[in-house]
Length: 500
Ligand SMILES: C[S@@+](CC[C@H](N)C(=O)[O-])C[C@H]1O[C@@H](n2cnc3c(N)ncnc32)[C@H](O)[C@@H]1O
Image 1 (cartoon, rainbow, N blue to C red):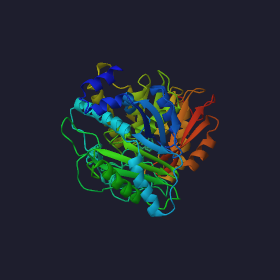
Image 2: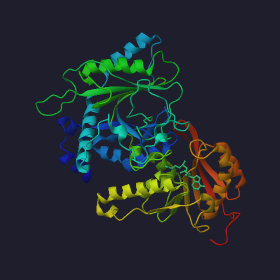
Image 3: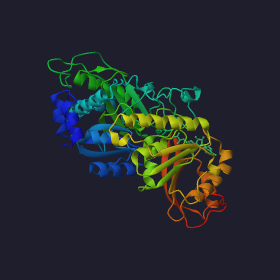
Image 4: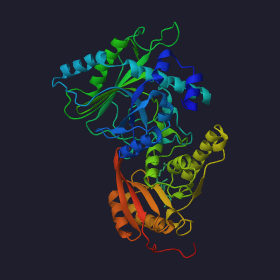
């Protein structure tokens, strides 16, 4: 057992024998990932855990099997948002056409499912979380309060709570925030455009059912004492051929879960979140292992378009950073990309800039938070982060020609940030200036935008310095966006300023 795991298992005060048993099990883990970056996530799992992944037909999810004792490493993956342990997966579930019959089948399914081992894995996961919490010396937030977790204080302005074209995501018909296995959480006080949208006929719903009773078959809290677990069911449904809504599925499935385990239903203060994911004829029942998306790891000071750290990680991986590379985000906003970069690629030097003083301040605050976090860890990471932030205009960067290896940035979409009209001038100027600073022949750029038409036109104007190598279609807060990997040609960039 690895040192960290041994430590976790040793003095986390493993809640129960079930948790210890759980460590010996193999667990099938489901992970939600930024859509478009499923392959990246699968590669990361292979590299760090040695497991092959299966990419779900339902985009934005991968599945892999690991020994349950590897859960700490699973939680440290950079490309996954939410994690769950799979109870059972049905690749070709036959739904009855009649609504009552279809719902009755879902109800009946509950008692046939192999819950025991996944619940042991869940218990083990809880004991690891307790350990982490103890280390951090602050209370584990209940799912009910976690929405307030990342409100960066100064960010709580009106625009934080409003929705915009960029940030809309499917609303839960029963108004509670979804969690594990969901990609649509939009924490209170923090608006980001990164919620991944569900397609039109997708729905998700939570259900509150039943009355309190003591647990017979569910996990026990401690010796002698039987804790009544609180649970909720979250149903995520996509597909046109279902005769029922996600709300109805969650309600009836939840009722059966309650009856089977004698747990107490509680939509907001739950211990167990049961997930019912239905995508056409694919049904996956799981138990959530994360209370909040892992993409919220770096940022404490949010802005109107803060990028998910998981998406930032995917973008950075796309340009394959090498030790000593100089990586620039010239429109860094709150710094999600360079902060993820500095955390994951500490042997590169990262430079971040933005023309908005407020954005630069937020980025600086986020870097300070990271420094503080590192200081409380071991001494090797307390040396600082290889990242500087500066206020500048992307059209006139104070950087030498040919001095930068990689540019990674999230461009203004022209919706919430900037305007489509401005992009017609901004995009070609950006590409020119990025071309100037990047090393000819080896330089690369990874650029995210939803304004694809404008980007294509701008790129056609600078085709002599940039060659498009790859496009990844991603979903950013319900918007169909693209991540372009560009390679710098050997050509000299026009408009090179002689004084740099
Ligand atoms: C989509 S946002 C980037 C969000 C960022 N990835 C984050 O996580 O917060 C685009 C950023 O480009 C910046 N920007 C727009 N025009 C710029 C310019 N001419 N020079 C530098 N930054 C610019 C905006 O201030 C904004 O912060």
